[in-house]
Length: 142
Image 1 (spheres, helix red, strand yellow):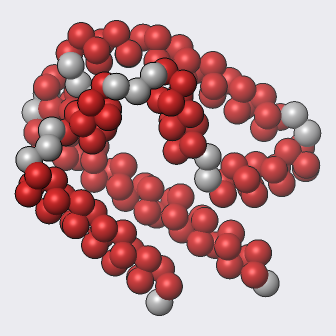
Image 2: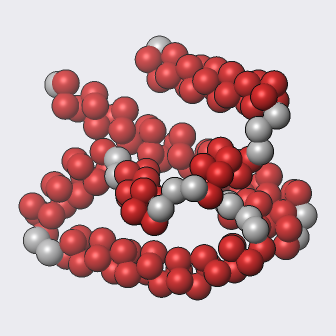
C-alpha cells in the first residue's frame, strides 16, 4: 500500500513537471545543467548527494563493521573510477553539447537506444534502490 502510494506520487510529480515544462517551453539544458551557470563545486556536491542513499548509510556501514576495510577499498576504487571516467567523458560530452548518457546514445545511435537505457535505468532504480530503501526503513521500525 505504502509502496504503491509512493510510486503513484512519484509518477504524478514527474507528469506535473513535464506538463509545466511544455507550458513554459524551457530548454532541457536549463533543467539538467541549470543553464550552464553552476560552478564545479555545486555540480560535484550535487553528484555526490545523488549517489548517497540508505544503501550507503545502512548496508555498507554494516558491511564495514563486519569485514573491516574491504568494502571501503571498493568504494575508494569506485571514486577513482568515476574521476577517471569523468576525465574521459566530460570533454566528449562538452564537445558534443549533450547533458546525459541517453542523449549521447540518441546522437550516436538512435532513439530506441536512448529509450532502452532510460527504461532500464528507471526499472533498476525502482526495483533495486527504492525496494531496498523501503525494506531498510521497514527493518528499522521493527
